[in-house]
Image 1: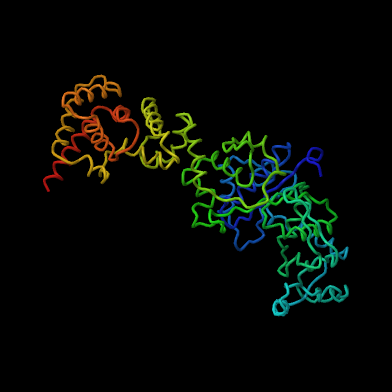
Image 2: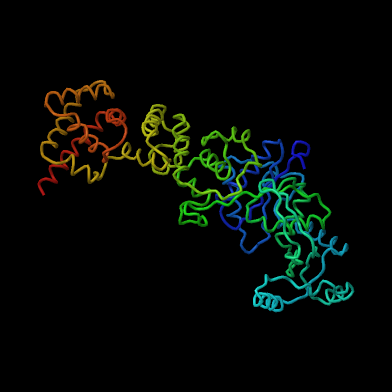
Length: 495
């Protein structure tokens, strides 16, 4: 199936039983890229047949995650499309029709084996060191007998008649040809005795009905693919092309889990990772843009992505690389865009009014930009902004031991506060001129006044240029904080 001649239709089909995790987001992004690259359709289908574990909250979390990442879908929930509904729980009649057709064509058969009998079969196989397989006990049950038992009220499962010899070859776009021995594939259940389809059956019926041309999914599904091919063939449906993307492992090459940090899209968003940074990072998990490039925009990714060049080996999660990428995108934001990203947190902390004046907004942009180059994430930037809204209630302990050491320091801070009263207009340039004059008059090194001043104004020993900080705080706020620090030093030294 050549994507250049057949309209590409791909799907991502999450189960709404939890959050959208990084592995699922990466798979969805690869599907989205492939569709956009070939002018095709990206379909979002919700596999919610597991009603006991599915929830509306999880569904909304998945949809919100897609919107935040900027992954729009052409068909699916809240969008609609020619194959609606796009929730499997609402497509049961379609599965029933498919099952009935396969039953009429003798491609499936009812299985009346009890759970206890099947458990005994598994135990016996394991005792022999064999893989558990259904022995075909009900495969040759006469049709009339099966219909009589169902009419009497028995509720069987239905199994697919599978090939017992030969091989099934998966032509995988990423992995090449992968052969599976049909003797290892038993007559698996496609319809459960509770009246619901299995995942394998519902998924294939939907893929066939929706005209899916390429199935791009996680490596863990490769072992299921022979079964899916068997279902497609039973349905007389065209075979999609398959591509199985590599696993994402933790730095120690173990399975990625919460102990390695954030794992869901929501957690990355809450941690201050920008969506364009996470999208960029997802691209690198199993694909190389070439020329040792690591910074790739969404638009560039559409042009560069090549499904045939996705790695076969596992991708290794690297938080430091993600933070480095995030810092790049954070520092590239224009002032207004930066404040827009910070706005919900600024409002939540009460640092800004709902409708600030133009002057206040301009000041806010200046504060954010002063910290932009020093921040890797939005929370880091917000932490640095705190001192511009609230005077320090404590001072860095190491800074105190190094810079708040004597009454002389307190006297200098108070003298500096007094000197600033005459600085008009007040700016970074005029504040620096005032300080340079004091330093010259007192015959001290610059750091002997500048370092204690930074600690007095911000509570910490690092940050943007001191005189830029002073300009942003304003003359009177600087004077108050210098005087407060001088008093604090005097008090501490007298204890």
